[in-house]
Length: 190
Image (cartoon, rainbow, N blue to C red; front, side):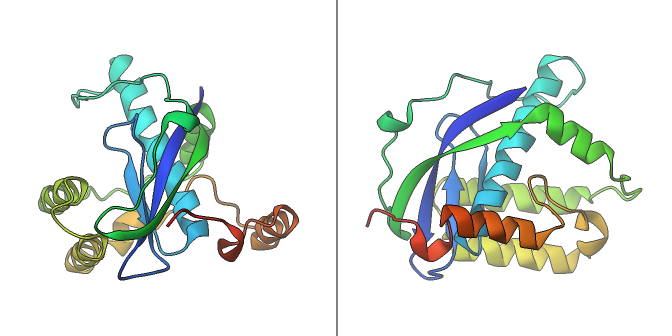
């Protein structure tokens, strides 16, 4: 199924090239990227992951309780994007994902036999809750995630391509050139 939701992008005060992303209508869908281009990719990945999890729960395929539910998206005109205490600028854009395409994409890659350790998930969830509650900065959150990755040898769990990315970088760059959507050409509100 296809979904389109508004996303708020905020540029980090300390790491100027880093962007945090949140979806006002989709609880738990938040991410970040080390460039605006990567942030757009990560936004797709975060949104489609949450929506697939909710679809699975609704269909009885998952026992993991979901607090949120899929709601109609707020009109982009009604979403206010302002910098917060951790950011210098902000903007709103729409992110489109297709959960059916995502499921096909994920089915093409063999799943790892290893299960992410529960300790890793618990520590990550604590950091994620602090970040979403604005109790820690994006830079602190990224440091925690990096430390967890190193501590638990994350490469063996996370070595897969992301949804929404192509192996053909030239094609991606030519589209960016045609549509003039490189980081330096996107206007943001300060």
